[in-house]
Length: 450
Image (cartoon, rainbow, N blue to C red; front, side, top):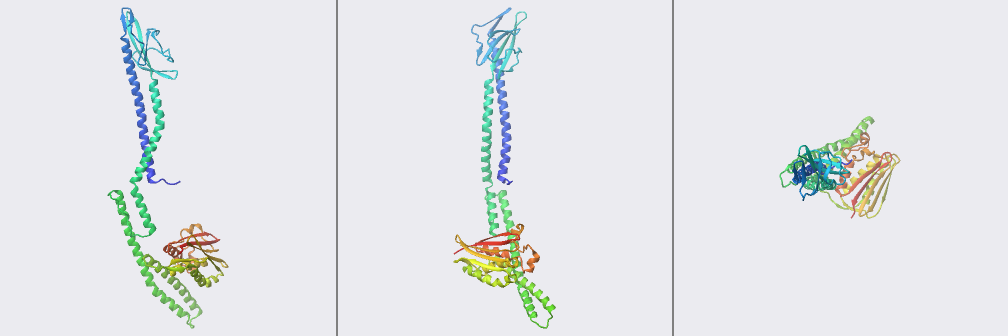
């Protein structure tokens, strides 16, 4: 599952909190409005019943109503009952339940036929022991309708409101964290460009992001100093080792020409010579890489890539014949590019040598060169032991060797493919590897054509 970005996480968190808080507030508001509406209706009906009762005149053991008495006023219907609950005056609303006991001075909610009513009863005594009841009846359907409509509206409006809040919040957070995106882009550019001399641009506001940028710049400064010391050390060591290694090689070759030495002595000297040559190759490659990292300029000129490949294949035929490996070249014409001849030769030597070293006896190496979309596309393909998938991403690392014992036997230094990728990048090219263990490996590269 793909991880959410910080912007999205913050948006979800605060939108969720706002939804809960706003939802709670709206529920309380609805309950409050409902309660206020009911309370207002209770006050209204009790006051109306009291006002209606002023139309009743009591005289000794009887009572009578004023001539202009009305039993309906502003949505409230009035009824007069005797002490036994019989209706004397007024009309009961349709759908109102008739058998509702009389209860003095208490507003009540009555439900009947899916409709709610508010009633208020008031008792009056007259004569010796006579009573009449005045009841006010009003429908609370308008309040119910308002609450139902409000709830339906909220079910529609509330989600849209939350979505709107989330979208607005996301863009606000995105704008607030824009500097973080800029920092990430600049750090990525510095990392991809491998130029630790660059620094992050500092924000105008001296906030947390300003402090973060300063700390990154301090880290880059320390890394630059550390890598500079490492490059200088590599260059110095490689340079200093060249002379003693050359002396060892020359002395070993001189001793091998001495006929007075026994076969056993010559065998031991041959072992020393082999390791000295391997060390010489290693120091030369390390020195070449160190000089590149120090920004040494390279002579770029027009090269015939096909012709250079022919030279390399011819030079490595003897080495390939030791394992009876056949090297074939298939190339198109007009394979011209701008490049450093020494480095391009080194690249092809490393790729083909690598194919020989890890190829099978009686195997084949195919070198294919062609033109595609103004690019020189090359492939060095073998039917050797191949590379397992777990090692494919690491073969470009310096000194990384899949089979260390076999690499030593072949005179490998662990820098060959690392140097190949550096040379390709230096010439604005690309390279990738395709391999199946036990079947073979293909290195495919591309260079701009001129």
